[in-house]
Image (cartoon, rainbow, N blue to C red; front, side, top):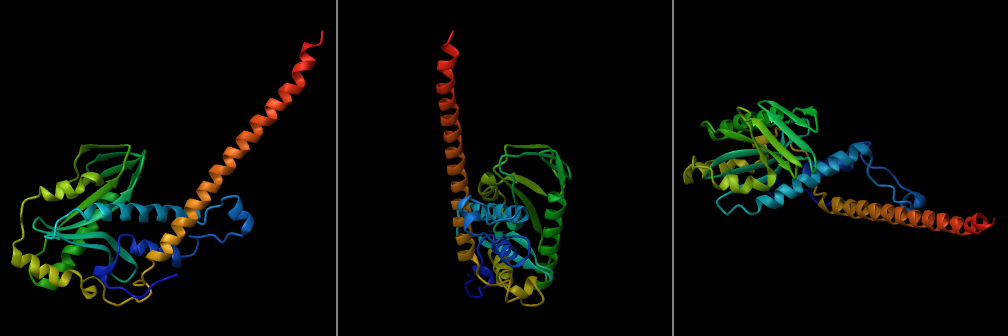
Length: 267
């Protein structure tokens, strides 16, 4: 179920991921009654990765609500013609920031300059974050007519460990839980008039995307909430079945032991 078309400033965190989950093939699986009974997830393996990414964006979006009214926050900003988006774009006294959110809950993150490892696997998060900010700066500069620097931030959600042995040159890598405090401590770089000029074009789709995309602008938040409910129910069902299976195995072993025990006592 999808709602109507919404504007850029109305988008919630994860908006573009919702669109991908419900429109791209291979994200969701159809489940019959038997599959639902046994707690089969409505998400495929590929869909699970996107789903977890959406949960990460939602969590960071909630954290960003703690910024005061001096900040403008946009979520899931569409860029270009090929479905790309920036998770969060922020405008405040400290300037303009693009925030690339990564949900690596429980994983160990190692950062050495431009190299970032997630549980030992190299990822392009730093490079992609830098590219997003560069692209945003170019588009905003073109719209307002004066240079608008944009600072890229890579926000890591709930890592088991975030070890930064060498800071990347052009990207700030931050534990997402510390992001708001970090932003509030940044020095002022834009005055009120400059912020007003940038704000005037920030939420205009034409600033970011050359052609409108009605399908991508549909509000799918309710559909995602329904998907969340189905996934939670499937997870609870699997846990229940696992517990019942364990109890049945224990009861079976105990019964077998009670039957064999008298035989062991016979001389």
